[in-house]
Length: 592
Image (cartoon, rainbow, N blue to C red; front, side, top):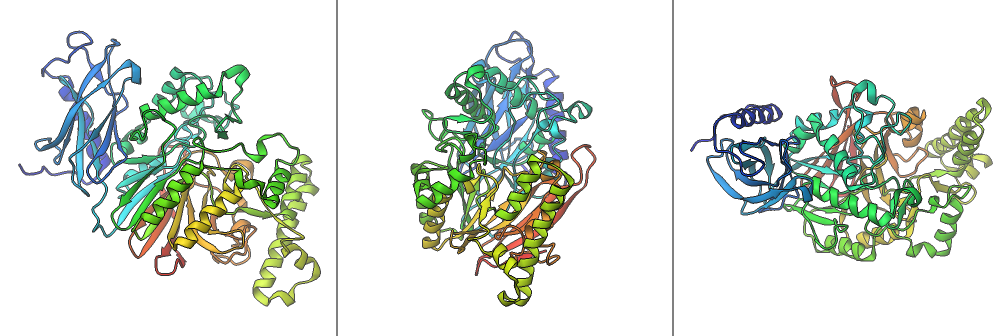
């Protein structure tokens, strides 16, 4: 049978198919089983797909009888055409109370690099239709995918998701903080406009119980832009901390109080269970839901290694002990003594899996999907000390002292770049000396807090000679950096995307800091010159929300930093703030 004509707008097409499904559900087809005669089956949260492989993909939906707790038997169908005249994979699954009425199927027997339509059917009730695709065949020449992180429902509208639907991306990668655990208190992070925007989260309390976590996912998945993006392309996801609790590690979290919220192990197990219920992710080990690291081969272009740097093996952060200096002394002592060698972001098992997998891959690029910033975000101590003083005593004089410290450091860097070391005065030489003015990390929850394990991984990749790129989230701002060893040798690059909605530096009054961080205050437009406060930083945006649009070929990887002009209105404009292209020939970088 010929394939019917499809409208140009995929999102419009999916919405129309959903409407058709609803019309069919109201007709006189066969009655659904269970839940009473003729009870409506509700597909309130749409459909999703994920974890594509060359011959299969995970399909997801949520199905519940209206007014009845019975389990809902479902038939999933995968077809090559929108009318489902040519069904190539089908089977039975059940949405039951034990899974929060979610259902997943691993649809097999598919062809590499092929687009498919899928749906779920229960009697006369038909879900909305989704579009998915398998991983490409080995001869693929280009892959386009979108990268997201940090989506706080109460902070604003998911306009970045809507923009991605229209972007031409074929796959979505989410690097964590898909939900947030905080309650709806207006004083909580990101909640100030929630009532005005009708974005109040549910439940009202901070999520701890099984029902709490399920209710929170349901609230997020009720968002029309999120439903549309899930129905448009397959997702590949990992969790970060807020799917559990803020700044989590193996045995606890900054935002978990065992005295009032029970054992961390119980909360962590509930959070992992509900994540697997609601996300279109393939279970790696049914006996260990905390194991979610896995990899995907996008033809011969790149292998995507999705790691877990949060729950699987992370040790407690150096800044989580309540030290007056924020853990810096602990960090420096461990780094200089070598004790940090046993301080880990991931287990030794996962580390070996990662580096061995890179060694075995024959793809041009090795890309790591990673929760936290991996690059060395080290600030000069002179600036951090001034900032610390201003934070403790926020006077106009102390605020000016911060600006003066930044200006002095950048002037010294610019002078050396323009006229050489001999042009520096003694004060400037001291400012640029890493001994007299050491570089210190500003965020010990990132890879900066685990420097020796990072160094080991980077040295291994360097020895392998791999072309290495990390995709990272968590920071809520857009960054492009060099990945360097402790001695400054470049091993790869990092694309870190802005958040979808979560507030970034601008929420702390630091939105204007970008040009000082990446050096454009010294040389406007001079990206990649290392003239900013952070040596390895080449580009940063500290104001806007958005996502990364990546295009990978055997010759290059290009990242477009796409931003939306607002998250406070559903009317928005998306634009590209910076385009960064990395060449496979020599890892050189160009900007546009």
